[in-house]
Length: 376
Image (cartoon, rainbow, N blue to C red):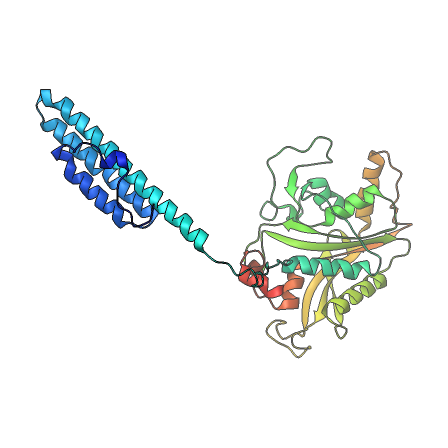
């Protein structure tokens, strides 16, 4: 049946004339159906005439209310006949549209000699690129990647790192505490979303004796949200424990990293600082890669940009680790008389922002394809 065919099916065309009450409406329905050329428009016409609140049902209800009792049966039967006739007209027109669509599809020609459309490949997110680069740099000097759970107990996240109950970092304003009870067999305290990847350092020392040389990348969580802070961000920490590890080893490691990541002309500066799990501790700055130490807005005129914190592992951390090892039936292995170590930590997000000039941390997590495609 062609798209222009307006003839109803033979059962409708050859049927007896409709009751005068409905004949005009069915005739108008047939005209409206023949005028539409798409299925959505066809179904709109169907709803207008044959739907629950359609014109034919309204006419039927009005006629039944006005008709004397003996005529109601005849009026009702005539209304049902009109509805059936309308459904036949609708079905015929719908089939005509489907037939026309199939015919147009079969008539379409395709030039098979044209080159195919290339599938657009995806790419790694900027943070994934930077994380992999950092892992590669530290792998060059013997570090291995270690990982741990993002939900930690207070023991791993705080106590084993020499942060007692009254330490500011354990304040509810900084840490996401979970209402879930501690896991069976877990060590100590409530559950938290880890605020740093330092718990991986503790887990590594509990699992193996020295030497230790690891980096621990991963997501961490704190109650911050502004252009330079996010409630969830990415961090990478490093730990080295062995016989005779010194602060000079720490500085040499960080200088190697800075020059591999930012360029061979970069230098570093260490400033005294405080962390509860390292002593002595330092903040590490690199010479500003944007102004070459001339002073600019990004380095606030100082010529240096802060990138990370570091220090020598506090003997209290070793004491907590050995105490837990003994509780588990393992021999002590981290006597500060025999071993020493250093640790450092930096934000992967901050490294990405400095390398690529991103001025708002939230752009890294917004999921805007226009931004992510800039770094494919």
